[in-house]
Image (cartoon, rainbow, N blue to C red; front, top):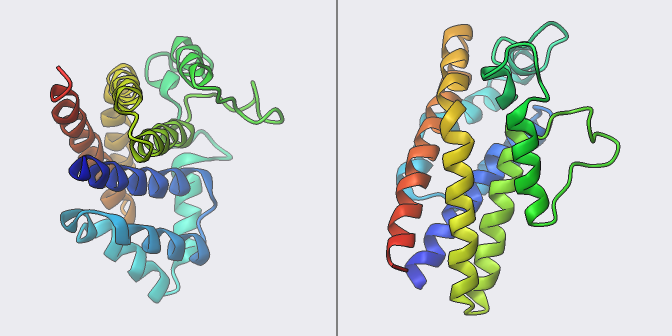
Length: 214
């Protein structure tokens, strides 16, 4: 149980960092908070190049240029070079496709909903929202583990594994490839690498934890 708690805390920290990257504007303050969160990573992830690139961005006062590149890649005003919405990787013209509605159903299954002001304006399958959901599931699992409700922990982690298999694992590779194809900024190439490593590590971690419940 101690090992599971440690692993869930690491997942929570990584998902917290990634949701912040995609939901909060790039700034020195946001980057500083991200570096603080990374103290809860495992030792290998603490040494990931993404974190040194973030530190370097702050130290060289390159945050504004990084924010411009972030907007070019993920926001606009022109079509983003690395579109952060799952549906667009299956239907180029449709940002509210089948994937969006399926993701919405997952959120609703645990009582989550996009803010009313953004509902039906920003698709639920934005990568930042998907990480918000993953973060919430890790938080719930940790809460139930602290209460020693192991059946509830495994149920939550089953849902998390199911969601990752149905959604992130189907499009993160396309998204990260778009990043590396379109950007020469080291920080974003490192972000693509971190995303890929997070996904594979999380898949392996969940398989290992859930296998113990069989």
